[in-house]
Image (cartoon, rainbow, N blue to C red; front, side, top):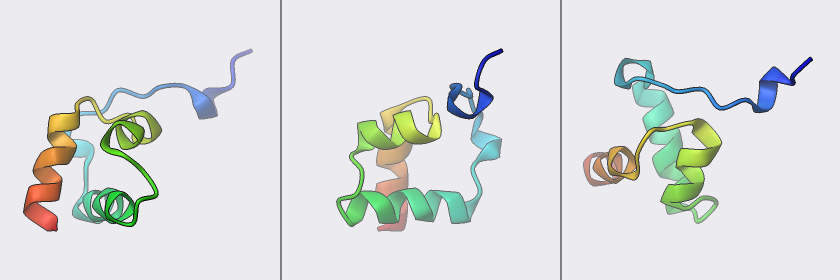
Length: 58
């Protein structure tokens, strides 16, 4: 039996709420995560997605 908690989940754009985006941006700005770290931690498909959020919500 596999541990489902650590399994990668592919997400789509519609899954990202504003609160989630702001949380990710906040963690990156505080230095807790890098863009790459955020993609791995949260299963975000591309760094460009996070880069766009940083531009919009900083």
